[in-house]
Image (cartoon, rainbow, N blue to C red; front, side, top):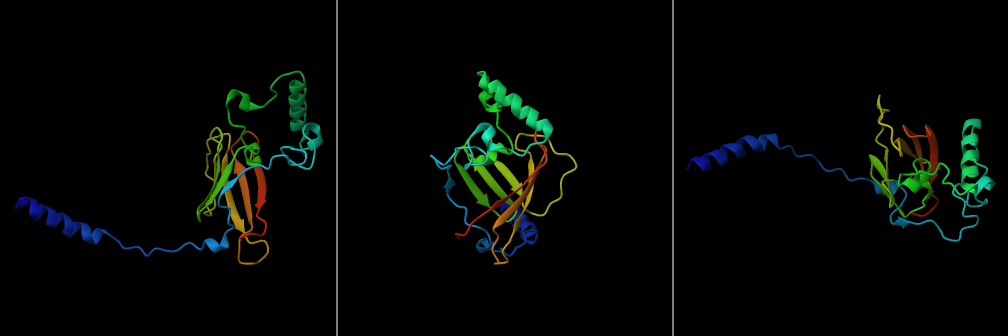
Length: 186
């Protein structure tokens, strides 16, 4: 009898504590359809990491500051003599930003209203881009992929987002700003 009374008392206290929240549907029609696995095209012209229309190495002509141009030249010189250069992946470390965004391994993109996840099937290179309007935290623990805040933009005024503008901080090459555009499609 005591247990029945106890269960009744718990239920009596618990019912007012439960709030019913109206479920809001997420209008995914505003976002680009990025479902599925994205794989870098084999045999693409140039096979360059940064610009597939240009040859690899110096032919890429990356826009670097004098400081990073010196690092890049030292990297190429070390590789020319059989070394690894500054490539951290030979030690099983993440290549970090912005290199993880070159789709060197299969990629899957998951879009939610608060976060866009870029899931990369290699070493811990997945990336979380906060799209919930938050400000930058006062302290960010440095990491290979950094901390990213972005916003979806309807660049054409069509009612659908087609650009994800992202800023990343707290990674070895910081800050990085870039835009990812989706073309046509659903």
